[in-house]
Structure formats: C-alpha cells, structure tokens
Length: 200
Image 1 (cartoon, helix red, strand yellow):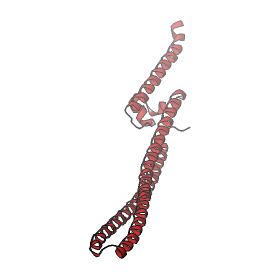
Image 2 (spheres, helix red, strand yellow):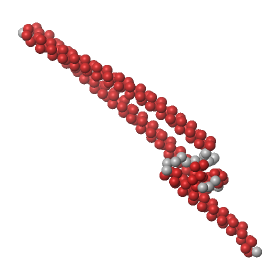
Image 3 (cartoon, helix red, strand yellow):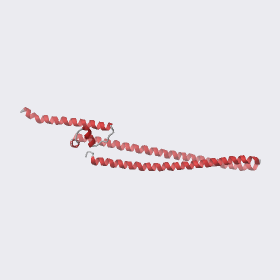
Image 4 (cartoon, one colour):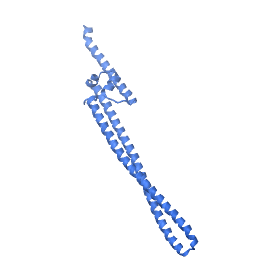
C-alpha cells in the first residue's frame, strides 16, 4: 500500500526533474545561439535545446526565459542597426564637411589671388608708363603667368564644387538607403513576431 501511495509523488518528482533539465537545456541553447550570433526565436531555441515548442509556450518558466532571450536579441539587433546608421551618417557628414571646408579655403585663395593680380596689374601699368620699353615684355610674361594661375585656381574651385555636390548627393542617397534598411528590419521583426515569437 505504501508503495502504491508513493507512486504519484515519485511521478511528480520525475516530471519536475525533467522540467528542470529542459529549462537547463534552454539556457544552454540560448547561450550557444548568442555565441554563434544566430537569430533567436522560439523555433530555433527549441530545436537547439531538443525540446518542443509547446513546452516553450506552456511552461511558465520556459516562456519567460524565451521571451527575455528574444526581446534581448531584438534589442541588440535594433541597437546594432542604429549604430551602423549613425556610423554611415557620420562618415558621409564628415566627407561633406571636409569638402565644404576645402571649398571655403579654395574660395579664399582665389579671392586673394584676384586681389594680388589686381594690385600687380596696377603696378604693371605704372611701370609701363615709367620703365624703358625693353622691360615691358618681361612684365607681360609675368602678367600672363599670373592669369594662368588664376585660371588654374578657378578650375580647382569648380572641381571642388562638383565634389561637394557629389558628396551631398551621396549623403542623401545613403540616408534614403538607411531608411529603407531600417524599414526592412522593422518589417522582418514584425514577421518574426507573427511567425516565431512567444505571445505575451
């Protein structure tokens, strides 16, 4: 009689041990999937742990364990996407700022060169009026050289302006691309919620 009475208690104890073993397997499976950087959802965790998805849904401790793991994985994924977005945006903004800074320096240089050429042209006219006629060719040669330098600086400014416009265009494209990727990630996360996440 005593043996018969103890049978239900023994069965309950065995089920509890089995449940604890399954919970331990779930914890190990979650840790392994994290180390391997695999996507965490109910199906993947249950398969790695060797337990049924039903156990993950119906057992309170298992459900809480899986919910926490999935939520943490989603948070990490969103955080990673945000960090990548910030990195790309910072990179393009830095390029645009560098291009603008270079353009500003070039504009200042062109302005200085124009001012200097104006001064030299005035000096040239003064010298032509007072200097011997044989010095005029040398002054004209210097004047031509300065004009070529001005043309070169103007071309460099134009080139830098085009580079700046290109950098701005690339930045706008990168922002649109990042927004598209974020939308895809959000849609993917919603799809996971519909197909593989634990209901709260």
